[in-house]
Image (cartoon, rainbow, N blue to C red):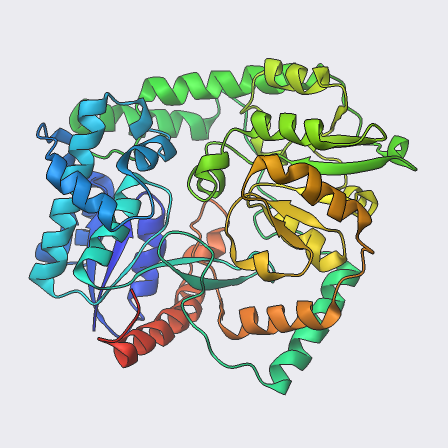
Length: 467
């Protein structure tokens, strides 16, 4: 078996560590950062096993035939791919389309030349979404390893770059259902937080860590500018740091209270804001990525005796301007609450929890609160999850939520969890930005078991695998 990883930034370290314990010939598709390409070579990876995509950044030929072919094998048009990319979307049209054409062509050739059987990658950057299309064209699977969210500390593999279809479909037995029931009871009683919830945003400007980052980026800008389309320039980073620092201060001036006792007896739903830019909304929920527009339409859809509570993502504080929050407060039936308000308490009193694709909807449905989502995700099969495909349907969907008896279907929840646990694995595919434990050999060995299981399945199904 031959497997390729699409890598950028800190995921290079994680995927390389996992690859050491995988039973396959490993190839690498790098977004082009010389530091991480050097990292791979320093660890013994042969140069002919690395596809360096940096030449695509300087391609001036927007071969429209290559772009059109890419679109035939992708769930998104090239324009949607560009718009979902926080950095490429800032480039001129001729640069972005030329980049896609070159990346698609280079990855197709790399797959064919090396007879690669499967590609593993994330679903954040244009290079990854384009790699998925190239894999589809070449008749091999593109699999996205991603956290199961609930339970914590596990990950699974999704077909393509969306997170709606599990790659594995192992049968569930009585013992699996019993284990799922035990987990479900623990979850309902203890209500754990996601394993990334501890991360706090640093707003300082002159810390030692920031100087280290500035030094690194200065070196990159001097010698390797624009080689890697996933690397922001220094101006962007500095502006973002100032922007977030100022916005966080302005949000504090709203003096939002963490106390939500004022909602007692009030009929309300909750809209949980996503971090943005972020793949969970810009890729998974691309057609519903305007969050203020969604909040407006929720407000339009509510009866006179109900309000929508808007809660900022705790890790997104600083990402939005004060004017965004002012506009929310100006809606006649919308109320902002503190980003650190108790999410479990808000969920318990709400008639619905609404988010584009967030974990809050998943949690709510397991606890018995109806939820509304605007993207196809793996937990949408839970009985209390409502998939909204047109925002014009919101009045009817929210009416159904208000009329719900709020009793979770225990059998359906445990059956869903049993299937998810059976087809997922212990370990993490995150990098050190979440936890240093993720880049320890113990995690690499644990996570590699999942990759080896999937590789065995790919080999068993080849060439009849559905792609």
